[in-house]
Length: 185
Length: 368
Image (tube, rainbow over all chains, first blue to last red; front, side, top):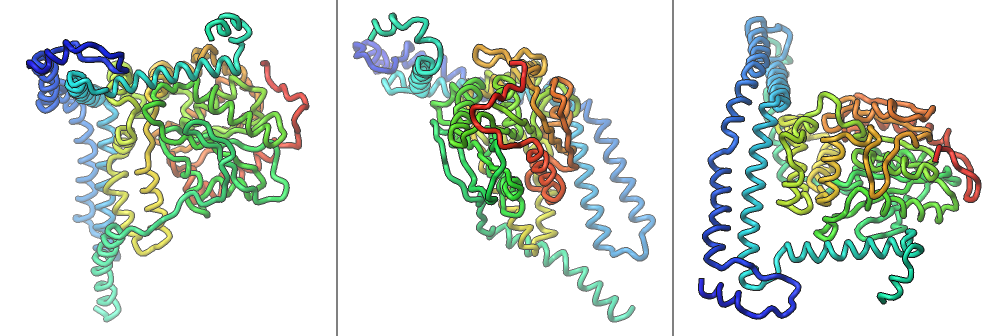
């Protein structure tokens, strides 16, 4: 905690990166707390309500496809084809079962209930990741180590400068304000 | 029971076991496979992007040359997976002079790249370079998947530079029925900003996970069962592992591009409404007056057939042809049937619309 505070009081030396405005205690209490809470959300399953709705939508789909599978199984065992190889017939059934299950899964994933459940789950995972990354960044900042955000900001500046250079070289920009650019240089 | 019947029974009983053993053996010791074997040179580079020129195999290749634009989410060698299933080689054999853009792998620097950078920057400069190199003022363009989305935009913004436009399983109309991706990315379920905030560039694994579950058992159990069945077929096994290599060789997508593509495409469907803005320019589908060939994969679960086919409804071109094949998204480029039926037709279509037009002649074919 003390180390964090003393680090904060150090004079800025014009570094390309910024120091965390938070103390070590604040980082521990707030940022880590937030990250932990987010991961707990993920582990508890944030999409429980959506999951129950998705299950309700999935039930008739499962019933439809499994009745197809059972029907096929029944036919295969009740009316075996005499001239058919048993192993070949079993392989055929296996492929039919997997194919039908595949179709069933696709149909379930095509329901709004599933889309909502998947959306909420992905969102809670992403939020947890963002909170964890922020925690790591604040810790790095407290030690005056450049972070990913600092590097991204630099890349962003380089990108903007590159765009301006492209405009000067190819676009009409130089014709519009040549004097101002010349003057600045 | 005769001896022959007993012998057949024994063979049938041991067959699945030996196939299974062979399959496990193959999975444990996959063969070494090569991909992208058609000879080419890198003729232009810019940042991560490379423009490849394939060595022509005919004496007088067709003019204008063809620029192939692949998606930004995978490696482009799917179009040149193996010599007998290479789209590049198939087109070359019929005289097409083929160039292809390889977008490379974006780094964190490229997170800022948007649709305008790809279309108005890299693609436009690649086309200019081709024109300069070949002494022409137009090229033909073929876009595959998201590359088709980009190519459509490019052809609308620069119609004077695009003689023929070919779209292959390209998402153009995003509001069509029957696609899981279209449902999952609806604004009420999915926020692309959050994805980019979490990852920066969107990792290939995140994207591949989404594609894999579109056909959950097809991409897992059924795929490996297929391998077990044909584990003794050396050519099939090599093809299988070439595909595996390609699937695992994904490319992350630049963060800003991803946001613009999901928002402007999947969520708002701006392109076909003439509302998509690229940089400062509005993309106007009415500019697409050049000959257009639409190639559709009828069993495509990534880009529904209507998403590409519907382009015909939105363009004024009088020369629009649709070719469709009963295959999936990737099957278009690696399937045996497309190589037998489709690609010769595509090459003929290009040949009929090619000519010795050279630089300097008027080539204004469109309203712009």
